[in-house]
Amino acid sequence: MRALKTGIVVVLIALGFLGGFFVGWALHDAGVISFGAGTSQPTGDLQERILEELEDRYYRAIDADELEVAGIKGMLEALDDPYTAYLDATETQRLREQTEGQYSGIGAALEKKNGALVITRVFEGSPAAEAGLGPGDAIVAVDGKSTADVALETSIAHIKGEAGSEVELEVRKKGDRATELMTLTRRTIAIPQTETKMLTAADGTKVGYVQLFDFSEGAGDQVRADVEKLIDAGAQAVILDLRYNGGGLLSEAVDVANVFMDGTVVSTEGRHSPLEVFEAKEDVETEVPLVVLVNEFTASASEIVAAAVQDTDRGTIVGTTTFGKGRVQTIVPLDDGASLRLTTAVYYTPDGRDINEKGVVPDVKAADDPETKPDEALKRALSTVTAD
Image (cartoon, rainbow, N blue to C red; front, side):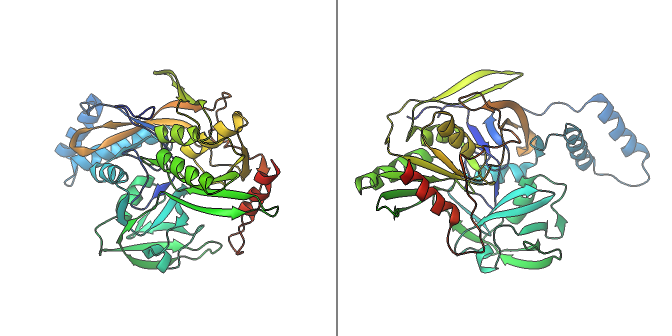
């Protein structure tokens, strides 16, 4: 049994998947997440009084449940914390489904930015790919409802749905000001956890390439198996590609880091959460030169791995500055299937860095131009790993 796979699940996430193959039982949008026990508490006396007055005196009928939820959301918004949110039963269930390895949706990964859902990845053969959607395109409304003032999970819950059903998206293509309406038919999509290949550097060095799409259950074992296979096939160095990887289980972040290193990977601490240090304790798979590829959509669990590699001088980080998600959230179950996502702690790199809103700055800067066929960042990573 790997370290950290205990009763409380800790998740590091930042990006949202449309129907999502991201981890825990609540992945994709919030930094580090743990799952605690809890139940809803009685409504405050003031809120109860106001609801009673509205029911007794307001000029038309009201939906008390709807107003109560709106009041809760308003209270949380006053915290000015984008990662603390109330999730209704549907949104909570969508998060749970993200551990299943397949989903019914449109086949794209998302990040919430400036009120819009920005597409960070489109999966081959998906409805999103067939519709011509790509990284950088923004979804500004789902079935006529704006994405501006709602949690990422809420929009994801609306986009996901039964296979064969339709969803209408208002999309602003990258670089455009105007929007257009698109109707996509949802489909069941299975997402591979990794993609591997053997590359050859200019000097003839064989380099094993592993792209990890998320940190869902089994990610560490999968990366370990991939690296072992590549090393057996003659790889003299490894590139771990974490670009567009929005995160996942903290336990899997530790396991993935452990493929290449041991010792401290990350620590967490909060006002009500004592300092906890998470260490990689399994045998290291390989000590060959390592490059970790990152970009602005590399987030949370991915940033933990990149920062651990950087702080311990285990390898070289190549790419662009990462997302910068360094907060811990706890998912608290409420009545009727709803939940509260609550920021509870900060996580720190092995050197004690708080990367929230700062990200991990690469050792070697390199950006891929999506308009060109060559992957410039990967090319730079290949030259860097053979130079080490």
